[in-house]
Length: 485
Image (cartoon, rainbow, N blue to C red; front, side, top):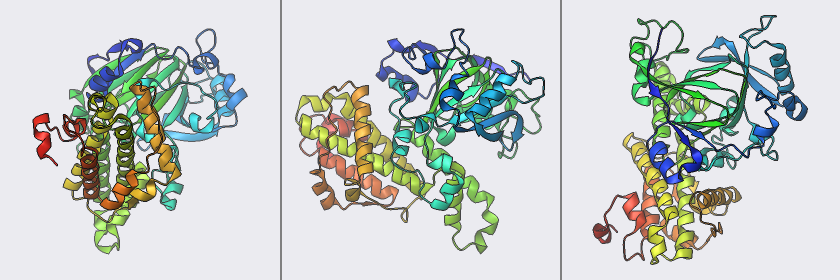
């Protein structure tokens, strides 16, 4: 079945793009883009690529050969994905070298595709690359460097890779290897850098995602180049795709919720991150809510005989997606507190009456983050998500080394993005007194909204002119600000 191609992905020289432009057009706009000029100094581009531009395959078993990795058999479907096999990097490279450049070697072996290798976690001292500035505002991996996403031990045994590791991967595949149609985990953003080789991407924007489902809205198309049944998938022919050919040393940004299918046109090595931040937090919640409703509907018939039906739904949600409602409220609560901590620090350093406080890009960025968290919490509340969630104690968090590390990481990220060279991440424990007066527990979306409002009121108490926190968080104009608190 032929596809309707409606256009291609914009290509931009990353060296000529400001972060503010990228954030406004591609992060906030949720649009894909192909970036060039950002991989010149990468170690991976030197060590992992031969002089002829082909993958330097022998480098991997020499330096990383004992690593156990997940490898996809591109010719074998298993449920909604390709069959996965565990093997060592040495075994994978040996299979690749024995194969031909086509889809099968002389012994009929399938093309294998090494996916989701947690390279950074496994080799933290080997700096294969530097994350480009545009992708550094990464709450997901910063969080997973300090916490598990889901702390239930039984669920962690089942989904250890999902909830306990990171989303920074290396992919390696011969010509003909491919990834079936999908949207990324958590509806995260992703970026994929071709260290060598060439890829073909087919994208479908989220506004058309319903065209990919079957009549029962249960299953999506697996391979868009198959002979798709119009009876089973009645909307598929109407889909209008965007196409992109990604060359070596190019990085593609994949926005939230965009379905895509990817084919390696040459032997290829790529580096891939999944990530999210304040710009797409609402997408993450929307997907979690959708998955929850689907999981709940699937086991609805046992509701009357189950002692804790809601608990079972939440356990299933965590097992399938890596987190449940409890995990999500803890995640956004910790980030709301981290953003507030950094704002308290900046208020002390800059003085809230200073003109710098009112025009600082970093202040506005923290305010945008809090606005996103608050809006997401409001959406959760509107869906009936109430109390009885896991409790996060704000005062205890301020003394937790893991949380202090999270705050330090967040401060460093924004100091780089906004070129605040004198930025310091010293923690100001004085705000503990404010929180003690407020009360320190957050266990529901409503509690989180109340905390954000309280913190912003304290941070705004001495402002006598336009307050960036109020204007960003509540979209209040300067002449209205005196009446807000």
